[in-house]
Amino acid sequence: MLQRKKILVTGAGGFIGSHLVESLLEKEADIRAMVKYNGRGGWGMLKDLPVESQNKIEVVAGNICDPFFVHSAVKGCDYVFHLAALIGIPYSYIAPADYVQTNVIGTLNVLEACRSQGIARIIHTSTSETYGTALYVPIDEKHPMQGQSPYSASKIGADKMAESYYKSFNLPVVTIRPFNTFGPRQSARAFIPTVISQALTKSELSMGSLEPVRDMTFVKDTAEGFITVGLCDKVIGQTVNLGVGKGNTIGDIVKTILKILGKENMPLRQDASRVRPVKSEVMRLISDNTIAREVCGWLPKYTLERGLKETIDWIKQNINRFMTDIYNV
Image (cartoon, rainbow, N blue to C red; front, side, top):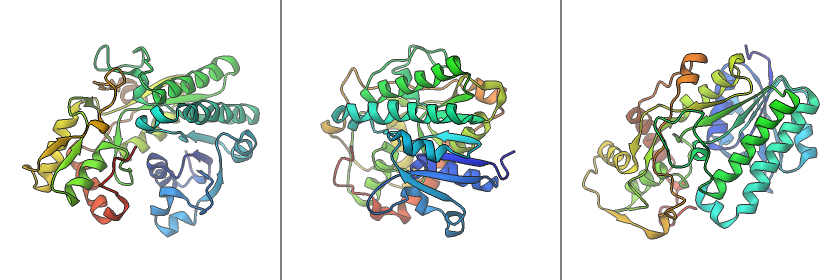
């Protein structure tokens, strides 16, 4: 189905984006990878791909906020996977306007470019953070959206722009709503790499809240979900959850990591700077993945423990990338 199809992946240099590019290459797609321009000419996490894979990718560098650049990047493509976004919640407290510009206006630029050029399918990326603290679990796609951080509010705005382009212009868009994703290449702005990198290099863990419940999906399952669900004709115009359907507290996940590492007795210290504002912290996220599973045929293959072991192995090999003495906002 994807063989020789021209596919644009925005945010291709990011954590999930780079894994998605790998999955698409395995399916023999023709990839154009959009990365954010920088003076160093960096490709982000795409540089972690094997050289033979890198040589198969057309990389275009620019800014999602520039509509002229976005239009040129979209030109000639069959499908667009839109992952480019600012994603860190703590940083959204510091720079909320940047989140609106990147996540809302950037998404508008992609949608308009796809509409004007008649793209066959756009797969837009949402986040489970748009739901806020669960009013009920598991969370299905009808759950109300709650903007509990500037990040989640900006993604709600982006999701609504995607919805409006489907309803106003019949743009063939599918919105993917991943729950918490983890795995190799994830930075220390996420808690699992933070815990692992600290446990490998320090004598104690500095943590935020341990009570929030998260539905953790391994990144290879998430990447396959983007393809399986995003290209499913039965869900055009819809939003679809991607999650395992099981929740664990952050504290329990920390214990599992320490058990795998053989450091069960490692002391934990709460760092007040890592604790989110009470009204902003999302306490419980557990997905209802019925649509992805029953309508589209997606099913995650990785258990939490298996995914953690692969993540630990990668971080051990790349520990020099992690600055464990600072809080990565």
